[in-house]
Length: 153
Length: 153
DNA sequence: AGGCCTATATATAAGGT
DNA sequence: TACCTTATATATAGGCC
Image 1 (cartoon, rainbow over the protein chains, first blue to last red):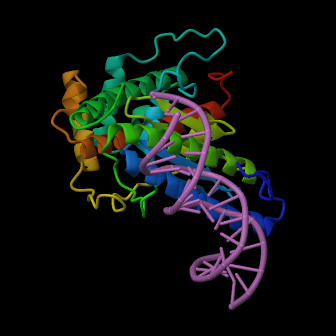
Image 2: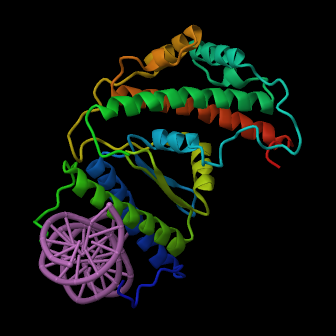
Image 3: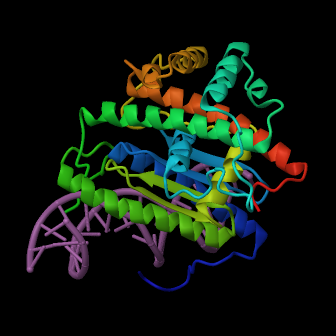
């Protein structure tokens, strides 16, 4: 890379930093978009300004990409039960129970009802269940997509 | 050499697409990194290859950015299909329809039924819907955690 | 602020090895 | 296949509105 002037380091001047921030943010988002289109691949970019505003773009959607990322085995942010010191998963929620709650919430139209009154362990179970659904959906998506694509594996 | 206007559209040739994919992926990741450093801002980019491999970079970490994103009240950026194909969001799946499918699948005990017969766009809608549920659950978890807990010691 | 301009810096499509 | 090279396309810092 050509070295000189514009080094990649924190910009002190507030005004310049902000202007540059906006430009680069747009460029980054655009690149991500082009990338997704060009390869018809799942991709997402999320950016937060110091003010706390979030700028994000994803294909097919930020949520779908994020959810797919979270479902990755290597992902460490999974709110899985592997945490607590030596606390055992206890009984938590059964798969069936989790299903009923989700189902009920869907009928009422309020997801909040699904988690109402639940403890952390139970919530984790519920999340695991949700992730399970997501995986099946993802698998189906890959299946459908396979009908017209690529150089995979 | 480089023919004019490199249109942003899906590359058919497998070999060329793969090569280009790698280059642009690296470029995108690099841009994200530079961005984060230059503005000391939270940012992340996640990319999936057709083979299913995930490439991601985030500052301070992908997980932290993703978590922060999920904590947002209601952020959802979409990649308007306009750029490349002019593909319209079409009918996709309505939120209600997605709910019914999930609900039905739960009753039958088979998630596969939830995605059966769906096209890619519809499946993505379903994914987004599932993500919504997850968001609520995550919010609930944060709430509970705030009361003083130890699930993530 | 938010555009527009222009000189550089960077990224990258082809082609070669 | 993956790594070079090189010509060209894009991005963007800094001005100037």
